[in-house]
Image (cartoon, rainbow, N blue to C red; front, top):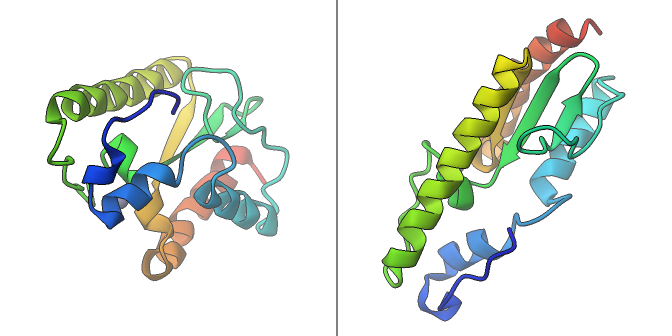
Length: 146
Ligand SMILES: [Zn+2]
């Protein structure tokens, strides 16, 4: 995320934390996902592979991709985090563009034969993380033939 958000000081501490964490590459949620993949023997992935959306994890030869999405920027359907109260004319179109871009990237990949997984940051929280990998890992093993 490169564009600057105005008035960071006017948001709640929780929102501020979501805004300033989970930006850019090799974020904590991404590293957690990659660690679990390695532990499960799912090696050989590439990070930020140059296909639409630059998926956080990808096996280009198998056309399997994983996006790890921050709940704030990508507007997680589970969390439905509130839009900051100030500068809504900035935030609302920005969020709409993010969501639209995600949708387009996934559609492009899928139309090119990729299987795409989206992991939300909240699905990696302590109370959800085991269930998340219990679902994801068997699917990946099947798709990757490992
Ligand atoms: Zn979420």
